[in-house]
Structure formats: structure tokens, C-alpha cells
Image 1 (cartoon, rainbow, N blue to C red):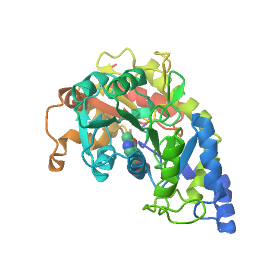
Image 2: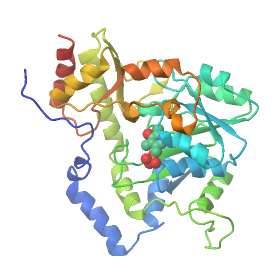
Image 3: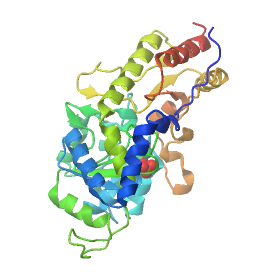
Image 4: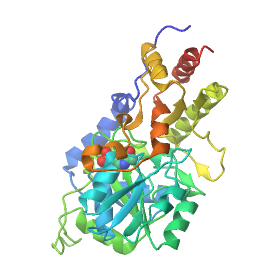
Length: 371
Ligand SMILES: *Cc1c(COP(=O)(O)O)cnc(C)c1O
């Protein structure tokens, strides 16, 4: 047995210290120019990200939650509308729907933990306006199934791709399938900044035009107020950091996929576990592993065993899917999601993990099951 190590779930300070000199230079450059709000660095980042994703418009906003709110407003979803989304998501997805005056309708997840299109179908009513798939854990939903359902029922597709940047389905980037998609740059996300940040992406020129107004007090490019709007802008300082980090993002994705492959080969023989799909097992999916969310027999026992070995594994959303927030008025049974939440656990997954640390995590999991 190796000596006990300390492996945090996410190493927040390493986000900075791993490239400290270069990042300080990027930030100093922005501040010396006094370029703080909606400046060239933000425009550069937006166009580089648009190129990376293969989408026409990227609009930086204050955070990933605002991105959903602004996107929904830009496509005209509001009071009287229902939006179907998975219960296995961050409260932000449902909250954004509520905050524009629409009703969040929850649906079950399937075996890969993603929104289940069959269950979505059962929840469509005459008031349904949109389906909001959540591109969770760095994987894109089966967008053929969801897109087909949406087309058949004349519904919009609005993607919460906060956890999906860089993932693809049939070659197409998460966030680019529907009316709009949203990204979060929260520090622990795939592409993280040093605070809050987000983006809305769209191929629709009119939606993009409305987003430009919505994020900056209804001001058009000439500075004239022509509509009601919010203050929800991506800080230029964060945009400059993100533009710098985007350059090495493909390597970061490669590293996450390599860590996922190590977990797969180190754990796939354990019958007590159900692992997430391995990289490339299904050629339609290109997964980027925002999280490595597995299912485990005696999940709580495994989690405490890992903690005693210094490995911080966590249950997503602190263990509570959205339908269990009773104070928010949700009702109904979600047996698939409930059963999944008895068993799900996320192992450390980030670009700072060394091969040795990954091997230590694998050894610790195997040890719990006596292997
Ligand atoms: C992080 C996250 C959000 C919200 O992003 P913020 O930038 O924190 O507002 C929304 N949905 C999902 C699925 C997320 O993981």
C-alpha cells in the first residue's frame, strides 16, 4: 500500500499556480490598458470560442445561469410556457426557467445519466415550449432523439451546455444544436476563469441581436438604449484569461480523456461499479469528462473509505436532484433518478491530476471492494 496522499476533488489554487507567470502577464496587460468592460479581449475570446465550437455567435455574459435566463428571454419564452429539463441538473437550470416566468417541468435521466428522450415525450403538454437538454458531465445527449421529438412537436431546443464545452454528438459541438446553448466558466468547469463567467451561443442572427441588447441595458452597438436589458457582461479581465486558456483547451480535453481511460482500464472488472461510457465506445459521442460520475454498490461506504485515504469524491448537487427540493413545489415520482442518486459518485477528474494520483485513486477504490 502506498502512503496516504491528499487528492482534492478540484484543486482551485492550481488553476492559477500551474501557469502563474503567464496569467499574471495577461491580467497586467488588461489592467495597464484600463480595458475592463466589453473590450477587445472579450470580442477576441468570443470569436475564438465561436471558431472552436463551430457556431456563428458567442456572447459573453456574467455567468452560466444568466446565460440561460438571457437565452430564454431572447427566444421569447415566458409566462404560460413549460420547459422540460432533467431532474439530474444544477438548480440553476430550473431556476432560470422560473425566473423568466415559465414553468420548469422535470424529466428522468437514462442509464448514461443524461436526459431520457422517452420520458421527455410523456411530459409534453399543449403548453410545452421547449426541451432543455443538459449536456452533463462533459457528454452531449442523444440529440437525434431530442431533436426529432422537438421537430415532431414544434418545440424549441435550448441546451444547458454549462458542463459540455468541447463535447460533441455526431461531430457537432454541444450548445450548437438548437435555438441557443449556454456555457459556464465557473472555475471548476471545463474551461474555468477566476470568478464567474458564462456565454450564450447561437446560429440565429436575430437571437444574437437580442442578446447583445439584453446583456448590456438594451444598448445597441451605437450606445443608444432601444430595449429593456440587464447588466450581465463577461468581465474583460476574465475574457482575457479565458482567451489565453482556450489555446491549450484541446490538450486539456485530451488529458481528461486519458484520465477517463485510466479509470476505465483500472476499474472495469469490478462488478460493484457501473462506469460512465469510456472514450469512443460509442462513435457518435465525443465525451470530455467534466466529471467522472460512476455508480457504486455501497456508495456511501466507498465515499468514506476514499476520504480516509485522502481522496475527496463527491455526490453531484450535494446529493439532491431538483425534484427533491420540496420547498420549490416540485411533485411526482422520479424512480430512475432516485435510484441513480443512491449510487452515483464522482471521482476526482481534472487536468492537474498526475498519473500516479489516478493510480492511487484506482487502488483505493479497488481496496474498498477487497481487490
Ligand atoms: C455550473 C452549471 C450551471 C450554472 O453556471 P454558473 O456559471 O455557476 O451560473 C448551470 N447548469 C449546469 C448543469 C451547471 O453545471
